[in-house]
Length: 353
Ligand SMILES: NC(=O)c1ccc[n+]([C@@H]2O[C@H](COP(=O)([O-])OP(=O)(O)OC[C@H]3O[C@@H](n4cnc5c(N)ncnc54)[C@H](O)[C@@H]3O)[C@@H](O)[C@H]2O)c1
Image (cartoon, rainbow, N blue to C red; front, side, top):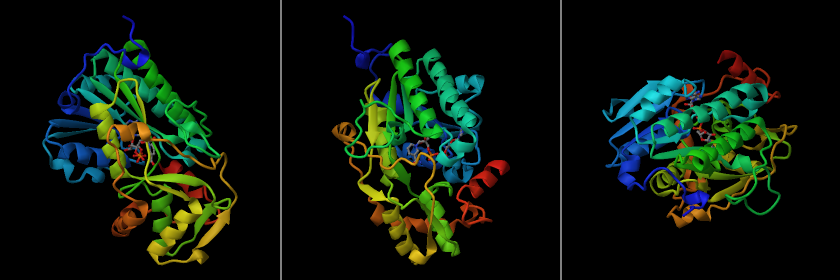
């Protein structure tokens, strides 16, 4: 009998304990990865987590300060581009959750080749190891940005990908290569595509920590265009709950959108952050729109809901967590020399990386 693609796999069905017992989490010292590691280590059926992280400018080992004492955690500083290193750890673990990536859109305008190397080639190197060592589950973590802008409606998992910027294009390419390893070799890949994450430990180049830290310093924040771009906001812990569900119950070859309950224009988001930081609209200036700034992302995530997913956090109720940035000034971005040049600090950070 010829099975349809969505059911074809070289690997026999596994129970969830076997899938989750030991996993390699790439990018586990980054924002989402470190929250996922904490969550995995809280689960009784997880006997080992190996973090493989290159600690680029975006990786922070302090994100795992407490977990580093846990005997079930192995921390490896290394790159997913090193096939020998990857093989060594993939062979010893049952699953891979792949988060390591270059993840900041603005940087992809300056350093697109690094995005292609890490996001596309790095993913293929992991997939080759998963194929070689019969990994039981490969969760490839992607983004709503691969669908491109939607003036109306919402993107479902079957929709065509129309990425606008080099970051999103490199993620779309990595999704395709991951799914090709399922179709061609039966590697049990699941792809997740989430909306914008927020929460403690996010790198200060992203909009919420960037605005919060600037406002706390008494600096201006800048909105692109008229601030009308719409984004869906997902608490990082909700995303990790979704990742865990897909790790345990996702169908090999399946794609799962993960969204949160809050859709806001950037201007609406700014209003909430101003109120939280005790600032007013005088602290906001407008700059010309960013290149290829997609007007609206929106996903239908009913497929994951059918697996039992329900976001538990709302942005408004979670805003008090901005206090994390107040308490961690070592994670603030460098002071901007030219507040009217939105790209300036990115360029400075790249030069220093
Ligand atoms: N943050 C979001 O809102 C969001 C939304 C949707 C999808 N995603 C995806 O989720 C994943 C994690 O995002 P994040 O926000 O935590 O990113 P992040 O930038 O905070 O973390 C990325 C991590 O990957 C590591 N890394 C980079 N290159 C590496 C390499 N060659 N080898 C090993 N490690 C390497 C970095 O050191 C860092 O720890 C990414 O794949 C991203 O595309 C993020």
